[in-house]
Length: 241
Image (tube, rainbow, N blue to C red; front, side, top):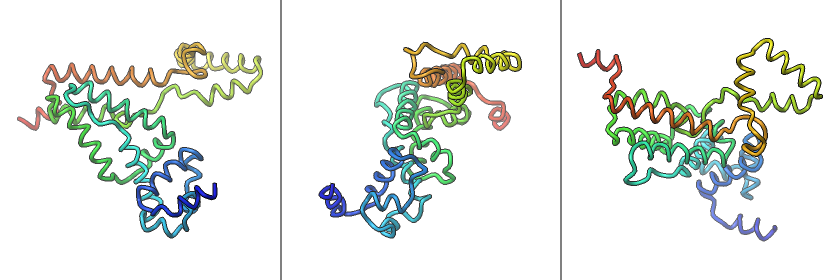
């Protein structure tokens, strides 16, 4: 352990090492554990040494996002637009699954780094290269939203509900479901239908990966139909006279 720490201290500190260590710290201990002091301890340096490479914690978080963006696989050469978009979105999702804290950081960023802008530019470029008009591509990007980064807000995010049920006695669980059915019958019917067998998913609830790909494919198929129809928005038609 001492030899490993000595080796770490002898390795010159640079921005890349700082960002990689920050990502590893967030992966292992959670985003709430990330601080400049804790990061410096992990790197075996004094906190002030970090500020030569990142100006503050916001810049550190921006850099950590860049690390995640760099993990997203590039578009497949020669693939059609739909295959390229699908592959990039699912690659982005895999990156976020490897780093559970990344979604929170992505949603909190108010500035866009060159790496983030580059990813967005390449993403838009896949539609334009596929023959999409600028008008259709604009609306496609709105429809995809955060899905281009591999995540979306889930309607049936019921982990807290299942945790409460698991901690309750059977008779309390039954009463909870009965009251839910009385007050919100449609929600309960659909939510209960999503409870898969234990062998199909880890724990109870929806298969998040399936649901994500299901919605992504619906969107891509819809974009394809609009593209083939030569769809133009009403605003674009008015602008063109």
